[in-house]
Amino acid sequence: MVLGGGTAGELVATGLARAGRDVALVENRLVGGESRYFACVPSKSLLLSARRGETWEMAVARRDALTGHRADERIVAGMAEEGVTVLRGRGTVTAPGRIEVDGAEHGFGDLVLCTGSEPVIPPVDGLADVPLWTSDGALAVPDLPRRLVILGGGPVGCELAQVYAAFGSQVAVVEASGRLLTAEAPFAGEVLADALRRMGVDLRLGAALSQVERKESGLRLWLSDGGTLDADRILVAAGRRPRVEGLGLETLGVATSPGHGVPVDETCRVPSSSGDVWAAGDVTGVARTTHAARYQARLVLANLLGEHRAADYRAIPRVVYTTPTVYAVGISPKQAEELGIDLLTAGYDLAATARAAVEADERGRVELYADRSRGLLIGAAAAGLYAEEWMSEIALAIRAETPLSVLTDVVHAFPTYGESVEAPLRELAGRL
Image (cartoon, rainbow, N blue to C red; front, side, top):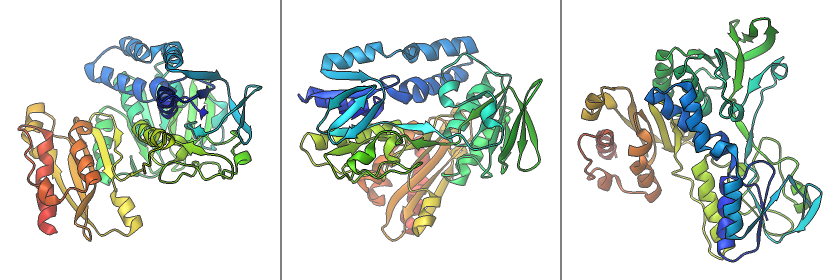
């Protein structure tokens, strides 16, 4: 029984069915998940349309075509052909080996949790009484607000700020922490902040939303620093939490708490007092990206089919698909400080590459991070055009623990942005 039909659930269910297992998948929304209909695919489509200079109407039409107009019949039919039984409705475990789906009870042996995550709505006075979007709404409707305020300066907030600013909305981003992309190296948020400001985005950094009120002409927002903003729509991008409540997991002895993921071991097995329970994707709270969900799903599939595979999360990429792109992988400077790692940092400005001159775009930088005690590359960050493509070799180097002596001997094509990693690699090798 696979509970949740998103990226991870679809992959696990289909893989087990192909291996000859008897599989049912429970989904109360759309089979295929948030990424396909309300997140990665529609947002990246709109970002591409913005770069191409398309009209809003063209961009929406292209977005909706790529998401199949948010209809999952074709995907469900394909899964049925593979041998997966799709159960529509909300699933709740009622006892070990028993699950209720909208009033009908079913039995199961193994249970795989793939219920994903849900947006967090901050407890702000008046926010619940005004029109607001989460990313789900913003990426599924044809509306183009004249004035849009985005709460949150993380990856989702930054991507959608660029989308709506590109198509003509007056956009403001409210981020209490004082900078964008707080989990990553400071330079990455600074590069992106400069790009957004150049597009006319009003960045209110270091201020939190205190109150919201309806006015005749729209909405009035009061900020903690005394400032105000007027808007026609508020988009909440203040993070997501694993969807664990109401699943009946307590009947299996699985301990959960609001805001936290289901605990998993290195094989993605969930500690429980009854039966075999597994989990993959956002519900684990480990690494909340589509590619991480796919990785965990492959681990669950392999372990259910008799292999033994353990997870290694050292090199899961984190990408913000704005222009310029922000890419990070491995340990960030903030994490290194929290973990007490003696970090060596070496960087390089993309403006020094020939590719920057060719592209007529000198924005961006790359930084590489090594563990002094181990003499290995353990993290990296980049902000620049196409960084999601040319930084993949660094993810491989971190995952494979490739010696710096080998990395400094790699030859990059000319002219490419990939050349930008050569100088910092040589610097780190020299300092180690």
